[in-house]
Length: 212
Length: 270
Image (cartoon, rainbow over all chains, first blue to last red; front, side, top):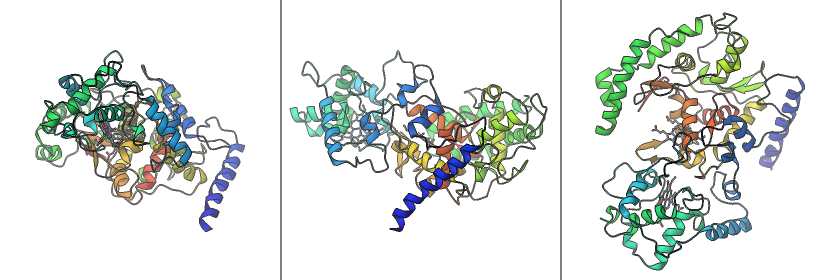
C-alpha cells in the first residue's frame, strides 16, 4: 500500500513542481516543460548528426523499445511471443544452401571492431567484433566476457540443425533469446551474407583455431 | 586563451603516449610500470594548475574571470562543488553538470557567445588540452577526499535521476546497445577492458570518483563528459553533446548511485 502511494505521490509532486517552474519565462528551457520528456526526446535534443550517423539511429524498433528495461524481459507475454516469432521470421538463410565460408576471413571479421560508428569509414566493410564479447580461439587472450565462451564451438558438429541454429543465432539472436545483448548481425545489416558464412566457418570448421 | 605550461605538458604527453602503448601490450598492469617511471606524479597536476589560472583570468568581451561563477555552493566557491554536481540551479531553473555550468558562466559572466563557449570542449588526439578540460580538472581536484553527495531534493533533481535511468536502459542503433549492455553486470569486460557496473554503488563510485582523468594512452586529461561521448559513439549513436540534457541526466543517475564514495580525481587511466 505504502509503496503504491509513493509511486503515485512522486510523479504528482514532480508535475506540480514542473508546472510551478514553467511559469517564469527563461531563455534556456532545456530541462523545463510541463510534461516529463520521453527518453527518445531527450536523446534527440542531446545529440547531433555526425558524418554518416544521423539522428534516425535514435528511433527505436519495436523490439528495442520492448527490451529497454532493467530486466531484459518483455513484460507482456503475448508481445513476447510475437517478437520472438518476428525475430525467427527475420532470418534469411543462405540462398545457395551453403553455410560455410572461409574461416581465415572469418577470423579477421571476428577481431574487427570497426563499423557504423561516426568515426568509421562507411565505405569499408563492417567488422563483427565477436572478440569484444566472446572467447573463441585459445590463442587470442584479448577477449571480452559479455557473451559465453565459444571455444571449441565446432565440437557440436555440422548437422543441418546445428548449421541452421548457428546461422539464425548470428542473424538475429532474439529468435532464441529475446532481448539478447548480442547484435542482430544479419537482420540489422551489420554483416553481409558472405561475411556471415566466413564467421560460421570460423566457428564450425574443424581446421579453425577455435576448435584446436 | 593562452596555455602557458603547454610545452612541458606536450613532452610528458608524448612520452606517456608512447610508453602507454608499449606497456599496455607488454604488461598486465600499465599503472605499476607507469608509477615506477613517474613516481606518484599524475601529469594532471599541471593541467589542474592551468585550470586554476584560467579560473582567475579575465576572459571574454566582459573581461570577467570565473571567480563569480556559482557552481552550486555560492559564487566563486570551488571546494567541494564537483562532488555535488549535477544539481539544480535556481538561476536557470535547471539541473546542470559542471560542463554545462561552465558554458553558462562563459556566456553570462564573460559575455562569450554560446557558439564560442562550446566550440571545442574536448581535445582531439594530439591536441594540448582545452580550457574546459583544464577548468574541470582544477575544479574536480578541489573535491578530492570528499564524499560524492548529489542533492536529490528538488523535484527536477529527482526527475533527472529517473530520466537518467530510462536513458541508461534505452536500446537503439544498429547494434541494439544501451548503456546497460556494457555497464549493468559486474566483472564483465570488453576485450581486456573492465566494465564498471554503473548501477551499483561500487561500480558507479569507482567510475564517478575517478574522472576527470589523465589518459596515459592519449597523453591528455579527459572528462567524464568525454568518456560518455566516446561510449555513445561505441553505441553507434550520433554525437552526444557536452552539457546536454542526456549527459546531465545520465551523470545524475551515476552520481546518485555513487553516493558516499570519496572523490579521487584527477584519476589516472590506461
